[in-house]
Image (spheres, one colour):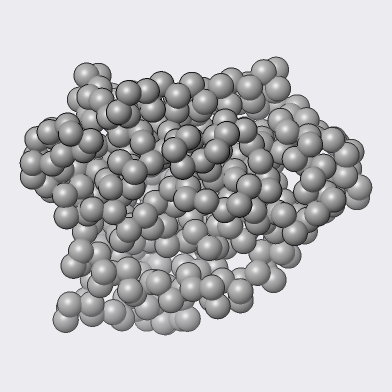
Length: 392
């Protein structure tokens, strides 16, 4: 069953990209009432021109926003300059290459501890996918990783509450619970840091006056929610997708075993071939045009990253997974002012985990169990078990 599901995931990405890139790669989708943009140049245009294609859904969407209470919509990822620049500057120093280097020893220790004593089937999500990014982001925020089960539950409930999924009573109830619990938790942390500041991002944010005044608790909450959710979600999915790609391509796995220095290059190819997110939304601030199509103000535009990453005008033999492919122009971490703040950190975490797996699982890999659920922009892996020889 596992291998069949892996093939389904690969087939879905390949066919979605191929269909989207047909013609000029720009089309209006009646169902969601949105424009989908698939070509590499056109997706890059949408991602970089924030003055025309805004991330601020609450401000520019011409349609009602059923998930308007989602904290991510009030965060750094969903606001534009000039305030975006002020807020991003506050936390950017925590994600510099130098700052990331200081985290590498603890990331390595976490991976070793999580893989210690594991025989037989390896629960990739439970052992690495959840704890590795949660502990890393917890260290940056200055919160206790013992709340990992709550962080994971809150992340999954909040990220799944969007679009048509807001009509699902179960998802709506889970979102409301997660939103309330996350808010209560961080407000307690804020109160503690006001009394006892520490050397962490939350203390920095509490003391900051980016425009001459302190951030409100709601702004602080949105900031923390974004770092916790995106920091966890992106790294977890990138790790899972790397395992899927190497499992399905034994020649690539053998190539990495023979030359571990290729691991960073292989991760870039995973980002292109099977990106952590299939697409991202923007909203037109006024009349806009893409590839000759006139788009009205307030329209949702979906930048289909998974298709742009397979545009044959940019990538030779785009449906082939090549771990030695020269790092190209994939758009999986975005472009422009909203380029992923934690991209460097995510790459390092996954590279450390993959090197450990290459050592601990010395033979061919196979997927023993995989459960999936479809999201608006692809297939989200929820559970994955890796089988193969264990060299413990």
